[in-house]
Amino acid sequence: MKGGAILAIVVVALFGMWGCSQYNGLVTTDSEVQTAWANVQSAYQRRADLVPNLVSTVKGAANFEQQTLTQVVEARAKATSIQLKAEDLNDPQKMQQFQQAQASLSQGLGRLMMVAENYPQLRATEAFVGLQSQLEGTENRINTERNRYNEVVQRYNVKVRSFPLVMFAGMMGFSAKQPFQADASAQNAPKVQF
Image 1 (cartoon, rainbow, N blue to C red):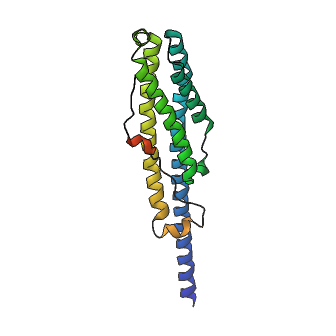
Image 2: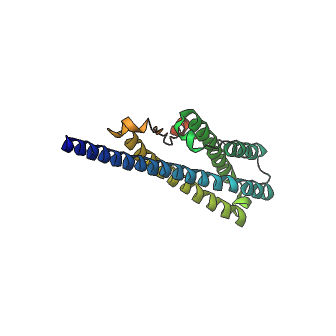
Image 3: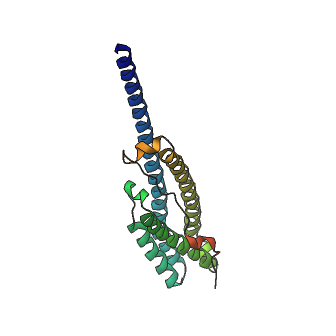
């Protein structure tokens, strides 16, 4: 009996240590997902911060199409009003709302840049050229951060859904996260009309 009791204690202790290790791994990966999402939001915030300067520069340098400027300002307001918290990363509907707002701002900025091509005096303005360059760099950062986020989410989701951890993940409150997905309209090339 003594040997059986010791063996049972050893098995329970090993199982407990394994469970703790797996739990800590899930916490670490969940934290990585949250950090990656914070980086995505930071990149989007940088873009939103550039928009007022861009709009002011465009207004000051050209008799610009007011409708285009208004659309960009409204899209920025909507995009910055939707913030996702860490717990929202599990909610496909909230993710879609956030992504649609950001896509709307991207489309508005794209239209603004295309229409700006008709204004040579605007394109020659140093402030506009600098802001345009910063905006292009920011768009690249946004794409990089979204890709990093998706990589971390994929790694996390594999952990959460893999056996035997899947049995414990749900009990411990860990569930799959939503990856970033492009808006369905992103599949279609934008129509440019002058």
